[in-house]
Image (cartoon, rainbow, N blue to C red; front, side, top):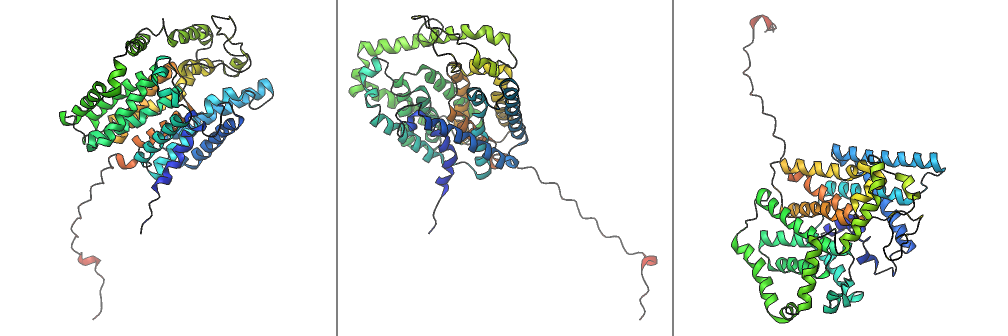
Length: 432
C-alpha cells in the first residue's frame, strides 16, 4: 500500500496565503492584532532562510536578484544606522523590501521539489473563502448588500478567486470536465457580485492573456465550439431562469451595474478612482523631487500630504507612514524608479525568455502566467498583498521547471576510427 504525501508540497504556498484577511479572520477578530504582525515577521524569516537554503537551485538571474535585494536591505540598514542610530528605525519602510523574501523561498522550494497538487490548492482556497462567507460575511451575498456596496470580502480576498478561475478554465478546456466549468463560472460570478472593479479589470486582462497563451503555447487545448459553447450557454441559462432572472429584472441592479461600468470608464472623475487620483496628485511633486531612489527613510518622517475633502484633515496620522492605494505610487515614493524595477524587472525577463522558448506550456502554466500578468494592472489601484509575492514565486517556479524546458541536445558521438596495422619495427621480439 502506497501513501501519497504530495499534499505536503502545499505547505510553502499555504503559509503565505494564510496572511490574507479571509483566513486570518478565523483566528483574529481585528486585522491589526499584534500577533498578525509577528506572523509577518515569521514569513520574512522563513523567506530569508528558504532563499539561502535553495540558493544553489535558483537560476543565475534569480540568484542575482536575490543578492541585489539583500544588498538593498543592507544599504538601507546602514542608512538607518548612520542617520538615526538604529539598524531598522522604521520597519514600515523596510517591509517594502522584506515582502519580497517569501517569493524566493517559494520559488526555490517548488523549483527543486516540483509543483504542488494545484487542484487540491484550488479546492483549499475556495473552501476557505466559502467558510469565511458562511461564518463571517453571510450578509454579503444578499441583494441589499449588492445594492449598498457591502462587499464582505476585501479586494485582496476577492483577488484570490482569480487564480482559481484561471486554473479551472484551463482544466475544463483541456479535459472537458464540467465540474471545472462550474467552478470557473462560480468564481467569475462571485468576482462580479463582490463589485471590486479592480478585480474585474484584472480578470479581463487575465482572460485575454490566457487565451493568447492557449492559442500560441498550449498544444493540448483546442478552442472549439464544443468547448467554448457551454461557457456561454450555461451562464445564459442560469441568468434567464430562477432567482437570477428576477434579480436582473430589478432596475436597481441594472443601475448599479451600469454605475460600476461608468466608474471604470471614468476612473479620474467618479467612484474611488477620483479619490486615488487625488492621492496621486498630492504626492507627485515628492516623487518628481526624488525620482530614482525615492525618499526611503526620510519619507516616513514626511508629514502626510493627503487630506480629506470633508474635514480638511490628514487621511492618516503623521508618524504612521504613507499608505498608498497603488503599488506603483508606493514604490516610486519610497524607492523611486529603482524600487519598481527591483520588483518587476526580473519576472518580466524570466517570463519573456520562457515565451520565446519553443517548449510548449501546460494548461496550468498558462493559467498561472496569465494570473501573474494581471497583477500589473491590479497594482495600479492597490498595493500588492503579501500572498501575491508568494504566488509570483510559484509562477516563476512553474515557468522555469527543468522538466518543462527542452533538454540540451546530446553531443554527437565520434565515429570510431579503424585501428592502424601494427608496424614491424614496433613489434617486440618474443623468443620461441
